[in-house]
Image (cartoon, rainbow, N blue to C red; front, side, top):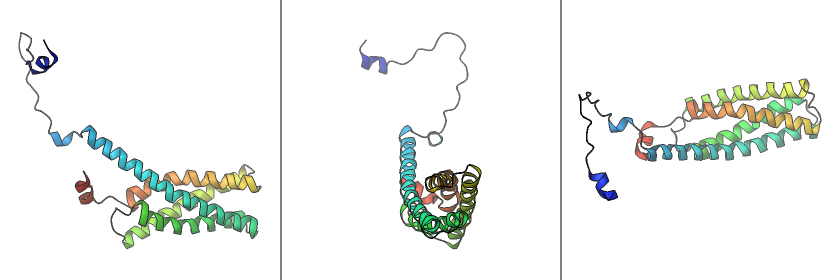
Length: 179
């Protein structure tokens, strides 16, 4: 038999009683591999855009932090909180107009959620920084920057999840058109 006739030949059922056949599942309930690849691609692009905005926010955060702590001799906690707040403002603009510009339009609710969750992120970042700076003795110029960078990275995981889940939500109608 040739390969083409193998595919065309019906399968013979084994002799004996037949089990009842289950109803086929609706096609819409099983995602096609292509749809899954498209979703993974969109998630990857979202992560890249989040990284670009987040990376610029980290740069702003570190520059302002170093300016305040080492340039203007502010206290370490004052420097970390103020730097995080400045970065929060620049990040909102980047997320709203670059990373999540395809999401629901700007509303008072969206702005409020962004700043509430960002405030929680600043608190997390500040507590992590405090622990590293005071608890782990990372208080020199290099140590304070390592402590600041680590606190930013750890708090960013929280930010990514809440921004994409609650702040910049998908518009279901827009997603249906893209699929």
